[in-house]
Image (tube, rainbow, N blue to C red):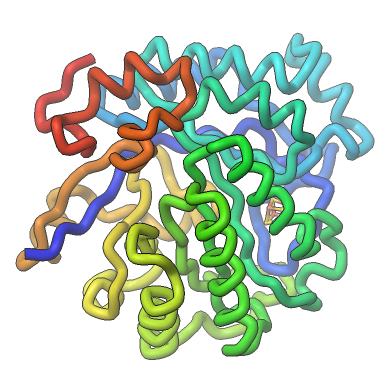
Length: 329
Ligand code: SF4
């Protein structure tokens, strides 16, 4: 029976201020409307997530918010002096509550990435595409060479890493193949890619792609099949179960469903509810559905997860490196 994995997470949007303006994004806010996740909100979420048995604290934020005018005021009104210090504080809280941080903070400088690494079980950055696309015309952080360089840096630092491509944002079939080949090459060089997300566009009102269609299921299945052929076997192909029926995609070669949450919405696609664990178990009979941690077993064996997460990983993981059946914290 094929094993299909997922993790149980909570979503913590540290800030929605972002220097980019991607043509499909409804997460980003301008400075006058942007927020910083407060300590008290973070604590409430972490406590509730811990009670619900989650193991992953997914920290996300807009890219390089410190370059956007107005961010200093947002920080100071929250009593925060430095964003990186604040992130570390939130990571320490998450670990105290028994949740393993996994962070996608956009492109970071090497010093900042090194600073955050010890507190994270794994980290991530969507490559999205290797093509220069119109939807990224106002997004300096989405230049493919910068994203590839950042993923290389994570590899040099031995960070277990999640990346992925977006499907339906104006890329060609060839672009998709090239993006997957680039990820495969990075993994062959550094060995750090744990999973590649095949994420379909979910068009949002008032964005450039509002009128674009979501990719058809057949197209997604071909993309998953191609990913499975191009990527090394140990790299999982992940499909988000709130954006497309996972069954045909699992039949096409996907083996992971990513993070699902019993507590928080998908922060990027809040109108797409997560299926519950029970619903997944019912709809995926014929598969062995297993909960995993945000770091994959082979990276636990290698000791690549952040050193501050080691004792928590040891208490949450079973002998096979997936989540122990019994909730321990
Ligand atoms: S980088 Fe992320 S948050 Fe910023 S505009 Fe693009 S999709 Fe939105």
